[in-house]
Amino acid sequence: MTGAPSYPPKNPAKRPSATGAAVVRGRTQRMSTPSAGESAPRPTADRVSSRGDTPPPTFPPKGQAAPRPQRALGLPIDERPATRPPASPTAPPPAPPRQSAPPRRRRRRLGPLVLLLLVALIAWPVFLYFYGDSKLSHVEALSGAPDTPGRTVLFAGTDRRSEDGINDGVEGQRSDSIMLVHIPESGNPSLISLPRDTYVSIPRYGNAKLNAAYSVGGPDLLVETVEGLSGLTIDHYVEVGMDGISSLVDAVGGVELCLDYDVNDTMSGLVWEAGCHEADGTTALAFTRMRYSDPLGDIGRTARQRQVIATIMDEAVSPATLINPVRQYRLVGSTASVLTTDPDTSLLDLGMIGWPMRTIMGPNGVVGTPPIVDVNYQPGGVGSTVLLDPQGTDEFFRKVADGSISQADVEAMLP
Image 1 (cartoon, rainbow, N blue to C red):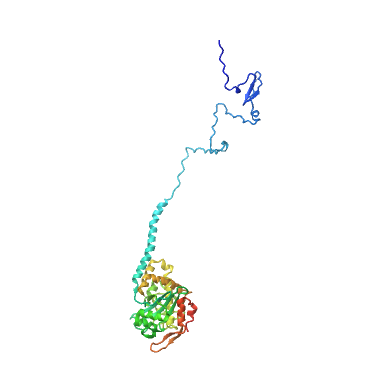
Image 2 (tube, helix red, strand yellow):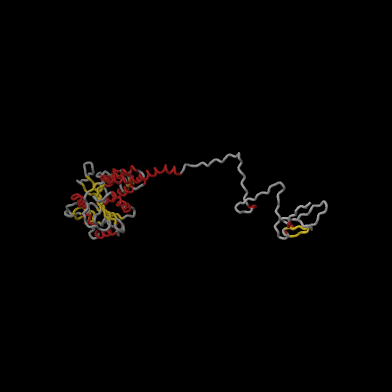
């Protein structure tokens, strides 16, 4: 019988040789033959690793599968983060967070309100401007003389006499208050009061009181006379009806006026106790008209008229007026209805004039009269007049023109 064929082992290094030697990783190791009842010894890990070799892998217990290592971000297995346990299937899902109204919806609600507010802020001033401008009266007054530097405005306060008006023995219409406002290109703006009884030369009529120019020749002759006196060309003419002062004061809710002596004047109707008092329109009108009970006469009256105008202007820009549309409407209507200007002066021009006037009539403004040498000058034929200093008047108006005039210059002008 032929014996079974023999084949060479596939891995002879792992099979023990006949001499009892075993090959471990390319090395031959003598193994002793175990005696009866004794198992063959196995190589220990320290024997293998003593030469720097990698220790043999550990195997799980029999019947248990080896765990598969997981890859997490390239970290070693021992440093990988622990996995989160799954949520309990019985736990209720968390409630969604409560959300407010979408911002887009709020913007849709606010959009029309903002648009309406913008329209109101623009439309209301425009309406007031055209409303006031439509109530302005115009009169030819400018002379057409060559321009002079800066801006010059002539204010004429007129008082119409009638059966129910003021009764001071003067007939017709006169210019009772004449004020020259000059805003130079640089320097100090000023307000110069010209007494109505100032003795002047009226073109084509000779010498007379200043207010006679308005009486015999109207606004244009008054402008021409003031230009000859001051050497300044008038750019704007503004006539204020003094009988409209009452409505202006009432439109701003009254004004506080001050006078340091008692008054009981039958000609103007003013009854006043020394001090400061809140005045309504009727009292303020009498305050501006009173003349015969004033120790300074016409000069004192001019100062009180400036006081009334200044307080009206302060009230016109006060918060109580700026936030009250009804008061604004009344003030614009009342102001425009008592003003008469030259055709080239609009309500916008008046606004540009009024702003520097508030500064001029403030505590640091330059306000006064030209140099006066006699308040009771009797030239003959025209009654009592105010005589200006012929030596200092020209120099005074030169300072007014170039803005070098100061409050000290105007305070030293009374005799």
